[in-house]
Image 1 (spheres, rainbow, N blue to C red):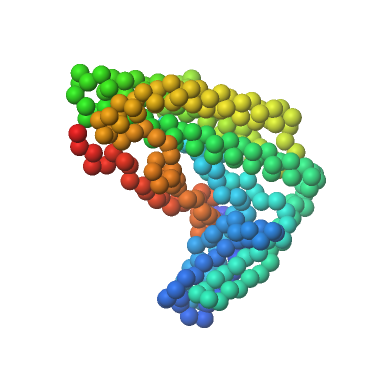
Image 2 (cartoon, rainbow, N blue to C red):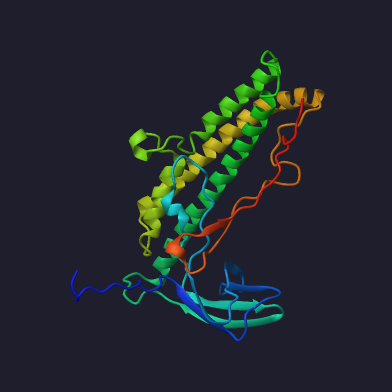
Length: 299
């Protein structure tokens, strides 16, 4: 390549936080938190426990939305909206010792938009962020009931009428689910882009420009929200029409009833927090698991 070529790391895309430890941290808690201007904790950054100067990067973004699982990755859904300008607090807790410093975030000096425009962009992005979350809650509910009904049906004799009714509920619920997420890989090539995929495209477009969103984008958000409400109402009707009779028969046989949320509350989902050093802008989810009520079921 010749002696004129230079290769180096790009500057961090987030806020660089540096702290010094006289000795390695061996016992007790060590955590690094970000607080918004109102004092609410909005992010946690893994803190290195090694001795000496430590440096981490905060992406200056809200946590990514909860996105329903589907056949392909929702690329835009891997990022959260960038936080609004303001004075934030970095808090390092080392056992009982607490250290804080302020972090001022402002508009890009090159920006041609105003703070009010930026607020509208943030509000629109968070509206789609919530839409993703509502979508995920609905698909979690559908999948939980499908798996429960299918699990019981799979252990009943082939000629059992209840098994057939449970399988029909599984199929009907899947028809509703397929209105939300694509089930084939290939995206637009398969012609199976669904609500989740359209939402991801809109979310990416809004995140891509931090000025005031277009009126057509705001209208698109409303249209997708309305579509999700219709799908949710459709599954509510299916549940209302099917579950009472199914649960009545399950109760007679002393089998688990089809309910949501399950006993003890809804199953926890991945708790997404910022990755140490902002690894290519992608956060690493911490997975937590729950026990399905059919675990160990024997008929």
